[in-house]
Amino acid sequence: MLACEPGATVSSAALPSPPPALLAARARDPYPYFAWLRRHAPLHTDRRPGRPTVCQVSRYADVRALLTDARLSKDPVRVPGYIAGPAGLNRHLVHADPPDHTRLRALVNTAFIPRRIAELEPFIADTAGRLLDRLEHRTHVDVIADFAAPLTFRMICAVLGIPPQLDNAQTRDTLMATIAPAPGHDPARVDHALHALLDTLIGGKRTGSAPGGTDLLGALVRASDESGAMSEEELRSTAYLLLLVGHDTTMNLIGNGTLALLHHPDQAARLTTPDLAPRLAATAVEELLRYDSPVRDATFRCATETITLHGQTIERGDIVSLLIGSANRDEAAFPDADRLDLTRAPNDHLAFGYGAHFCIGASLARLEGALALPLLLRRLGPVALAKPAEELPWRPARVMRGLAVLPVVRH
Ligand code: HEM
Image (cartoon, rainbow, N blue to C red; front, side, top):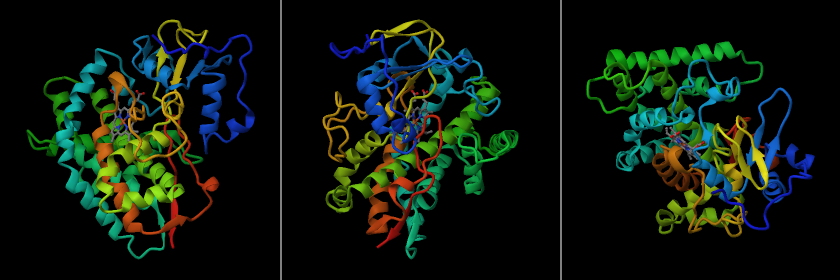
């Protein structure tokens, strides 16, 4: 059953359009637009000739219900051409329905169980500490390039078993170019560079990986070569997916989280107080995930049959965009939803999704956030934004929300 509270139904007769000012500001600050949608158009349908129809869903209860609704498919083959992505790299678990999804998820899942992730704690703390050592004498720091990007990429490389010589900014740029291309980029070159990288990574496992090795990429290569549990296309797609989302999302958590804390110095101070920090870190990370969600919209879904919501219909074949960032600011689910409260409990946010596609990397992301954010704030000391918040560049992306740079200056 979809949530459709009595009295909250919106008449389909005269559906309002969002105010242009809210639309224009959306890339920088989507929250006023989301609040407008929740209030006036909880199912907002954009139908244009020659394009797939996109239905945006903005209320918490609806987003949560639809995240587990079997009438929505995750297979983009149903809407040809909608997911552009790099050629030949679309057959992974984010874009799969059962039974393929169940099979692919099981192959990846074992590497991310909380017990195995907890073993990474000393490595995360040590890597974060070393990155911060390098910034000790700098007055100007870019939290993204100098800290969040290298830290989060190193961790997903460690899980996958990527050799240190390939764990670098060039590899990161090759991946990021596929979702946020630089102006004037050539898509064919981006694709070529990515496939060359995957050839090196997967080829390296085929020739050099020790039998019985514990790294995830080695295990996936064996699953493909020895038991045939995944095809070559699935193997390449999965390697690409994990490298990208294992990094981009957690980088956004650290970037968006740091920005939120800079706007709330009292709460940031509590997170750096030695006897408060360890207890506060866990709830703080949940609240920062809720407050400015790194994955703003859920990934691709389309309707396989007609769905009625708030008196309107989602037609078969329509794309359904579940606005996680909006759901997480819904007053109906979170009292005083626009207020950051690092002690908030309960906090049933949807920042990691919900249901069968719930984030596989949630334990890793939570651990990285809980270790990195207090350490970063403590080691940076008193800092301020180096440019006005309104001028910070947000990376253009279909579902993610993250800063391109976060420049701060030490007092
Ligand atoms: C703060 C960091 C992260 C956030 C906010 C986040 C968020 C999400 C969300 C919202 C989904 C569900 C998407 C949907 O249903 O449409 C998801 C799925 C997924 N995430 Fe994360 N994620 C994070 C970190 C990671 C990390 C570190 C990894 C490690 C590789 C990862 C791997 C995945 C995978 C593989 C899926 C697909 C699961 C499936 O389809 O069954 N994520 N994530």
